[in-house]
Length: 348
Length: 172
Image (cartoon, rainbow over all chains, first blue to last red; front, side, top):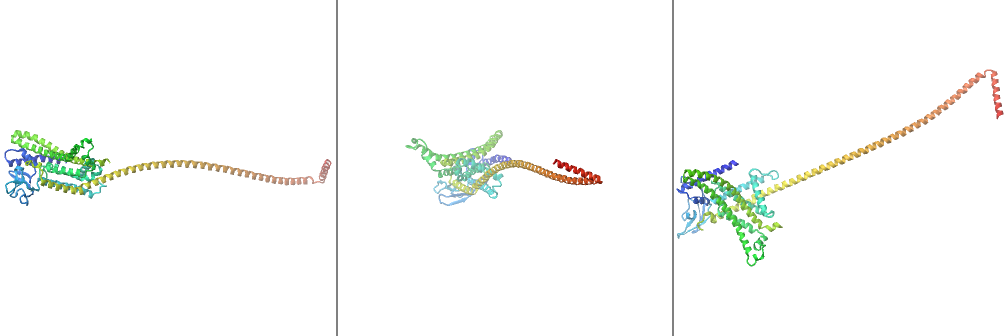
């Protein structure tokens, strides 16, 4: 098992430069590191794998756009994008539509982009993993044997999150109804984070480092907190237990508390996004340092290569940890906030 | 704002797909995935707790049974000692009684024997006496026959007898 992990890491380190090297070739002479890093972090309309001598090897992904002008749906790939649409370089290669009067608008874009494809891959992995685990229980007598191997590992992880995070934060009464959501969130973020560290096809897309994903997850948590919050929770927001002058003539505390309702999920959103995005950016930057070094001469190349390979190894290991920690933190804080929305019931 | 990198701009398409994917995975896993695992693990946990409690109870019961057995054994031993003691007492009593009876019996037999011996003796004495009397009569007869074989002697005797009788009469 250890060997496999080491091999994977080595593979990551070895393959990342190739991918970038290919990009570099295509663009030509000068390295534009911010643009390369941002390009790898961004969404794309095709799944780029590698380039060799000017030829791109990439998996085409379906583009689905609705024209603003005619209202017609167009379904194609990046190669065969029809006329009024074009990839706008000024907007980081997003699809835009040229209208008759010469102005450009963003059409309704429901394309299966790289990120979307990655999300579905994660969804399929999760479904396979957990449904096969659930199947194991159906075919075995839980009184006679406990699962071992992979099912045992998944069971241990699920129960770790359930017991130490969900139950500890929400309490016995409600933990059962929130557990599926929190566990799904945890494993979704964890799978996205881990698969994002693999540099080639089935992984590599920056999902959790995209604000849309964290925004969606944060909104889900906000709904989960506020939709089922009990009377005590709302009373604490609008009539908290503070001296009356803080809330009566000018509702200072209620305003602050109401603000808190939105800042909590906002903090969740930014934390996950920034951590994952930064992690990817640092790994990509260190990879770029390899090419920067070589472009400055052999001496620089060897020196910087050694340095950046060590740093890459370190960063990849760190990212493995961060992948888990961020998923854990998001779940833990969601659970704590949900627990706060049910607090008085616990006391009774 | 317009030119922010795509990872920083909300994108309705991506949000929609994310929503769909998340709803699918949440829906399926909330129904068939996590609750099954959690329920099974908790069932197993309860079963293990139950088994542990039962084992504990069983060992306690075993301990009780052991103690009970020991107390029963102790009681049996005491009872055995009592019975032995009683038996010894009874035996002693029986032996004593038997001895007493034997003694009485022997005394009775001895006394009976003595009585019989006494009566036998008296019978014998009586017989002897009668025989002796008879013999003495016979002897006397013989002696008389011998002594009175001559007339003189007969006369002498008659005289003496007459003397005797007359002296007796005188006396009387």
